[in-house]
Image (tube, rainbow, N blue to C red):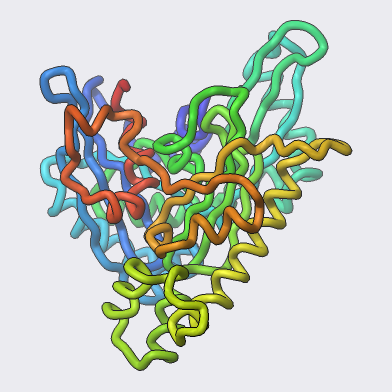
Length: 365
């Protein structure tokens, strides 16, 4: 079971009538403070291909730190999206990582869904600062074994008011949301390994914030949001070097942290990189070790988001945690580059990781 399958859809069924047909073209839609990004996938001759993708800007103040401040304003943006992706009217939508609560529990092997929900609701207010009535939640069974180990469950919850505002904006935009999903869960669906025994640290370095998650079997066990983004690097370069935003973005991607250590550009970027690296190291140590073990459970670190393109950033973070850091391959579940080259350039594709993960929900791969 996943977050989009039952609870949220049932809770908001007044907004979303069930489709009357089985095969849908569905957009994966990633809503941030500054933009809406979408990706639509389709089957062509038995192969998954990109049908459509794009980005629409959101004016400042409509969405702030993931909270919808202007429902009507976001509704107008979604109307623009509807025109751009016509005739597609269905979508899977991400919800902001800042507002998600994730916790894990154990249940006896063979527990029914109703029994699991009763157990979750009994423990709910001890785990998150919300009442059950003020939240929407669902759970994933990530391990189901006979014996003492039983069932491992990961619960994802959002404030009901936040979720309802996104739903109303979709309704005003005349689009039907089939699901709302945890942003990092969607991203992990695109880039993380599905093997349950493999633990990944996922870093989504965006413009205004960074999402970080400890993922196993594509399910985030722990998540956090860091108020550090690549936009801060841009601002620092603009201020230090007296250049435009566009020139600063080019500098980040072409020189970045591999520019000379005594250069003004490097000195401008270093404080933001240090702050990010320190936070990543903190969560790596918090989530990566059990008991007194000195061997990390985290076997790989994947970097995505628009800020992932900063030259030298993977190497810089790797020096902090002594584990290789790689930029993600958001197309790994679609196929080999020997067979198909997607229309989105690789550097740009890292910004679309969440939208691609959402789009994959409606495609069998």
